[in-house]
Image (cartoon, rainbow, N blue to C red; front, side, top):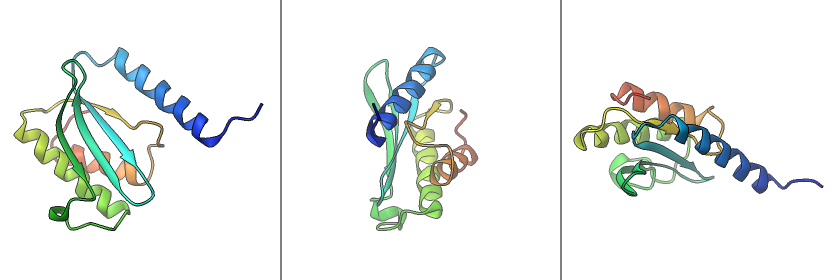
Length: 119
């Protein structure tokens, strides 16, 4: 029985998230979502179930509306690092979801690290 691409993506996303939860130690989760048109990221406190900070390529202030490339992902990563500093968060763990750590996701992660987030 062949699995659809969506089923494989969901399995991969759950596998990644469950492995990360074991080593979370109360740190917030930096969750990435990438679509064909946009990229967004949230800093989530799973203990309390709240979003601490978020950033998206849909925000006009970032100047990347309508663009979904590596440069846009880097700007979103820098924005989430800045907002995490304002929320007094320095350490988190990176939840790439079912997306491969390559291209846009990697650019976002590197920009967030350069901005001061540790994961």
